[in-house]
Every structure is written in structure tokens, then in C-alpha cells.
Image (cartoon, rainbow, N blue to C red; front, side, top):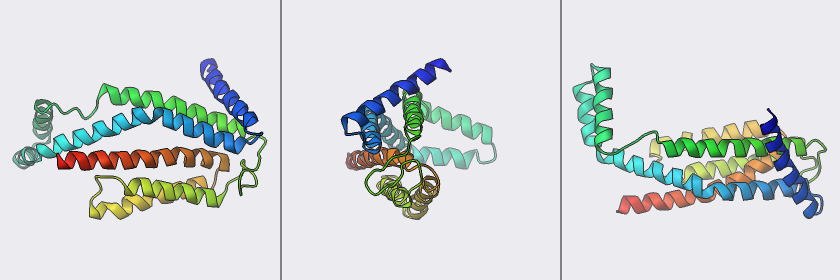
Length: 214
């Protein structure tokens, strides 16, 4: 795909330029470009997250009515779905919105393009901080990413007491296992993006508390 290759080429060229400006450190360039890209997308991802909170709050308000529908039509799944959809429509609740789809469509190519450019930039390896070779896995960096993932999930405002532990451990362990087997440069990208995600989790938690108090 020529267009996609050109897109990745532009991001790769940006990485090289940033690396040159930062004294030739590809690791620092990956961290900086990843942070800038994630911060640039933060308004969009925050908007989607806030909208998700609003939908959850709206569903919670009609929960008694939903419970009655489930009880009344428990033997008729089709009717239950129809009545549930009617309740959602009457309350102005849209579980899938065009804005969310567009937001996902915008984010995906940016992150995939950045990841592709980073993989290309790691061809020559390179050192960064304690990392001897960015092209090889680094367990300590993978552990840092797993920790950030766990903290982001732990800050989730909708986790119940029974869900909290598995919801925190599962993604953290998966992150650790996955990143401990791939290039440290990719883990560096994940860590930079995850730190901004942690900021987003804090902001979402704050908004959730505000909605709960309203």
C-alpha cells in the first residue's frame, strides 16, 4: 500500500530528525515522539472516555426499568432485547455512536504508523539509559510498562470490589509477558503512551466523581 508506506516513511523521518536534534539518541526520540503523539490525541481520547461515563450514568438511572424488563421477558430473549433497545432510545442512550467509531478510526492508523516507524528505527539497535540494545527485549522496561498499566486500570472509576484484583492483574501480566519478548524500543513507546494514559485515567476518575456527586 503506497499511501501507508509513505505515511510510515513520514513518521520514520520525523523520528530520525528528532533523534538527530537530540544528539543521535533514537531511544529519546521514540520517547519524545510517542509522548507528543499521545498528548495530541488526549483531547479526543478524553472526550470518548467522558462520553462513556455519561452513557454508564444514563444506564444506571434506568436500571430499575431494565431489571423489570429482564424479569418480565426472561423466557423471550428477542422481546427482551427489543424492550431494552426501546428503553435506551427513549432515554437518549446510544451504546455505539458515530463519534466513537470516528475517534477509533483516527487513533488506529496513527499508533500503527508510529509503531511501524519505531520498528524500522530499531534496525540498528542503540543504547538508551540502562538499555544496552533497543532492538532486544528488556525485562525492567517491560516491568515498568506493566506497572503503569496496573495503575491505569486501578484508577478506573467503574471497578467493583470483586472485579478490581483480576481487572488489574490480568492486563498487567499480559503486558509484562508480551513486552518481555519484543524490542525494548517498542516497550519504550508503550511506556511513553502509558504515562499519558495514566494522566487520562486520573482525569476520568475525577470526572466520574463529579458525575456521582451531581
